[in-house]
Image 1 (spheres, rainbow, N blue to C red):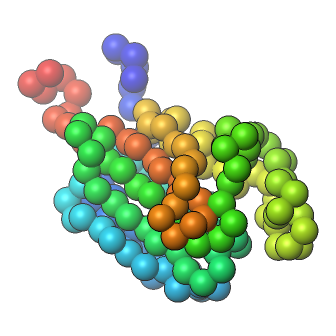
Image 2: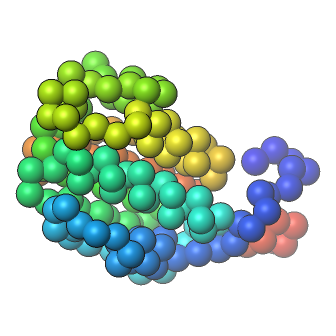
Length: 162
């Protein structure tokens, strides 16, 4: 955030693992969702936006999973890391940036007839950027896609000790 800029309304320190637990508990599951959450990893968040981000990532993972989805939260240096993985077909390296573009539908997705609107990952990226973070795709250990979100950790409130 630029010096002198005001944080978005409604932003507060929140435990990312708790946000994940809440979102997962409110959803119907097409595939089992396994959790590996480190508690106490706090980020400054507009909670309803983080829930929308999680919902979009979970919808995507469940749409492409063969049998399960894994959600992880951990701290990595000065960042919180949220990863949502599935055991589906994955995302080809050439398509890893393109999946975040509006209305992108990969060939594999169209063939399965279970696609979404084509906006979920675009919205996810915008939410992550608004929170000062990054999002990317890599190969999951399970063989599918692993979407990794990195958000700055919640530090002291602005103007105090900085």
